[in-house]
Amino acid sequence: MNTKFYTCLLFILSLLMHSSCKKETEYLYKVNDVAVRQSGTTKQNTKTTTEFISIAYSDLFNANISTASLNSLSLAYSAFGDQKLIENLIIKNFLNIPGAAIPTKAAMNMNVPDFVTNTYKKFLNRVPNAFEQWNLVNIIKKDTTTTPELVYYGFMTSNEYRKY
Image (tube, rainbow, N blue to C red; front, side):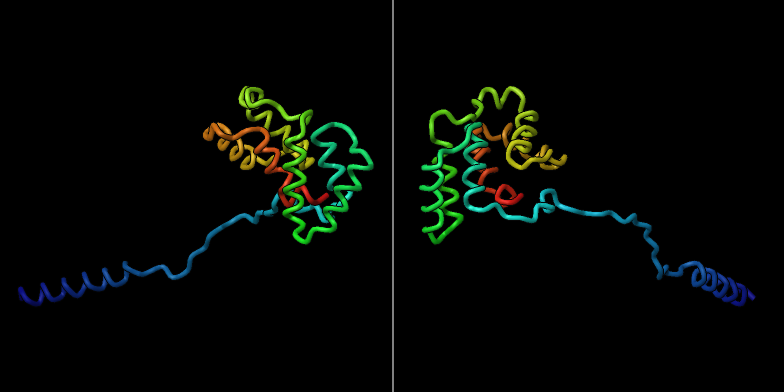
């Protein structure tokens, strides 16, 4: 009788364990749809050579470029095979000309978030999103070698700056 009782008890326990340990095979995750879009992707048109040079000059000097300088740079731009390289050289040249309206490093470091927002507005005609703002502020604060000229160079040679 003792073995019958234990056998019966063992059978009942195994039934309970078998019925209670079922693996759930269907998962239901409720995720909200999110529209993801990158800032600046709405700019479809590429600036012409003349527009690029004129806008870059006026962004840095708050004045119009002379016709002679514009023609000279446009000719060099058109004659050179690597367009991106000539753009870099033109921007570097503009940044090194005395009289360019570039804030000092001290002015940049006084209020880095405002500097970043103003730079986005000046060169990309938009306000930075939260990540762009945080990332650039973080870079400027952590790397003491970052200068306003370097930030301006980065913006003016970006793909987004080339579009409107």
